[in-house]
Image (cartoon, rainbow, N blue to C red; front, side, top):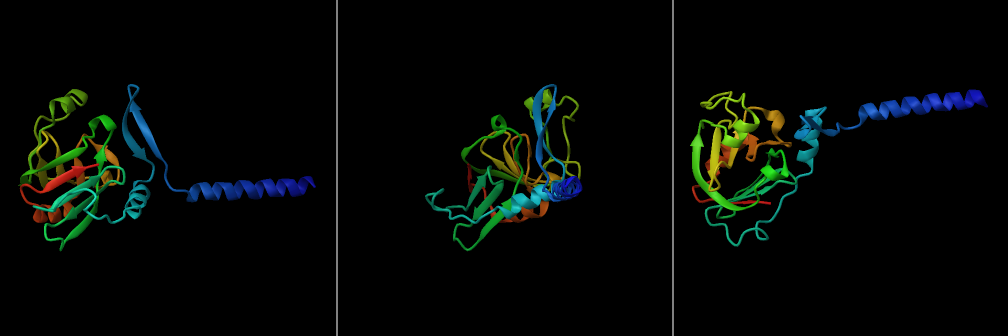
Length: 201
């Protein structure tokens, strides 16, 4: 009987260990000086894959009264950006990065006020306060956190932009902006106009 129990417990342990190895990565919070700073995943590719697979297409009508100039809906919960063209011939759905914390997240209606290919970047005063080691200015190129294209919103400091760090997409990883893969922001840049409506929910 004890041999049977030992055999069963060994089998149970092996089965449990195998299931743990096969389990998806778990999102964790990292803290610096007692403050939560960033979401950290043990396996980024698994987490991003899981986020992308949960996307679903949406209808524009519950969110906008019309599609004049086109419309972007940013869903910060599902970490997705939806775009509809004015004539409804184009609908796009892109995975995004979203702000690190609730207090960095701004929700509501805004619009595209400026479009820049090859943007430069200056951290905001609050970013510099949190990260004094950051440079004051970064020109266009592979080190620029705005990626290849940026859509500036009517809210000061808020943008929809690309990123060269593809690990950020599908995660809470920004200081307030919405990030897309460079190939996606390039496509969205071509589709949007000055005045395109933007709603963050």
